[in-house]
Amino acid sequence: MSTPLLLTFNPGSSTVKIGLFSVVAGTAVRIGQGMIDFRRQPLRLHLSNGDKKIDVPLHAPVTEDLHEVLDETLGWFAAHFPLDDLVSVGHRVVHGGDRFAGPVAIDDDTLAAIEELVPLAPLHQPQSVRLIRAIRHLRPHLVQSASFDTAFHRTQTDLVRRFAIPRALFDKGVKRYGFHGLSYQFVIGQLGRQFPHLARGKVVAAHLGSGASLCAFADGKSCDTSMGFSTLDGIPMATRCGALDAGVVLHLLEQEGLSAKEVEEILYAKSGLLGVSGISADSRELLASPRPEAREALELFAFRIAGEVARLATTLGGLNTLVFTAGIGEHQPETRHAVCERLAWLGVELDAPANQDNARVISSAASRVSVLVLPTDEEQIIADEAVGVLHQEEART
Image 1: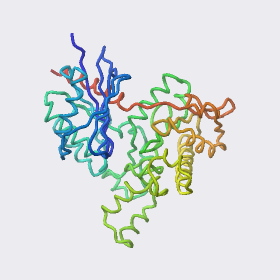
Image 2: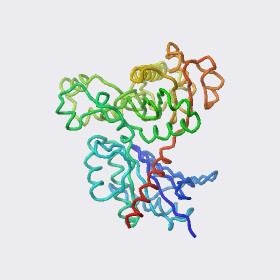
Image 3: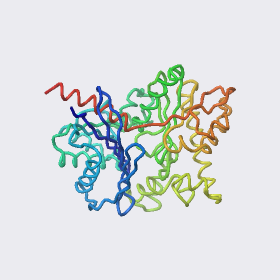
Image 4: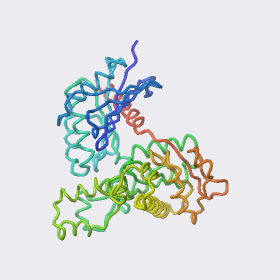
């Protein structure tokens, strides 16, 4: 008897991560993964199966609907895995608005609702819509599900979610939503399994990658987060500005004479580490650079992260645990050190060798705050939720 398989799609603004899972006793078990970077031409599919890694060119043209690229990608997966056993596809969808508080099966109504939210996440949402429609075209028999980054933060109170703007705008959806929810959901789950006594306390997690944010947890639930209405808010990122005085936007529009599209390009693609350094959006390149602009960009990054930790500790009324996750958080001791050095007044103290080794626990025995490094896995959450949706759909038929 064959084992059912499911795919997950985790789109960024310019990349798509693809996970392949087998469904064993109702549990999703990863068996392979791939990644396409649309910034690189010609396109290449990075495919891995355990220790075996394959890097192959994709010859299909990149069209608006992605049909050809996805068809060729599925062909490469089929050459290495039994894709005839594929039963479901799960998608990460960045924005669920106020409608979606958890994973859902994708039908015409839910797809229309997801598409309506494109203006709230213009970098990521369109890619999710394209992928969903492409799978519908190529494999119309498959059950598709959506897992929303915003859903995890629905436990936040209206006090936390409000901006100090007219109430009618809040009622129209202009509010803080929060993002990276799938990552935080995985991290708090891992914390609960590995350090249950810490998971019940006051926790701040820092998801530091090309997109970056922080989240405050109490009893494992999201209480506050750095990202707000859009993925621009909070701390500086690779190319995004982070928190910005709204007057700057007005100035760029009215005094500098820029169009809304030009301002959007600056804030999303030309700011952050890239904008401050003028060198690179990649923190690894900045760490290796001797130029003072690179050092200033990294110092600003750490300064804003530490300040956000302190703000979130105020929401929680204290801080027991600080968790670093995602690419920078998991692999850059220098960044963790720079952040924690600014939090010494909170009682944060690192064990230098443990931090340098990217150990699981990097705080010293004397630290009043536990500091951990926990890998995240958004695709696992997408797959787990896809299994749940698949079982619900099977029960209905």
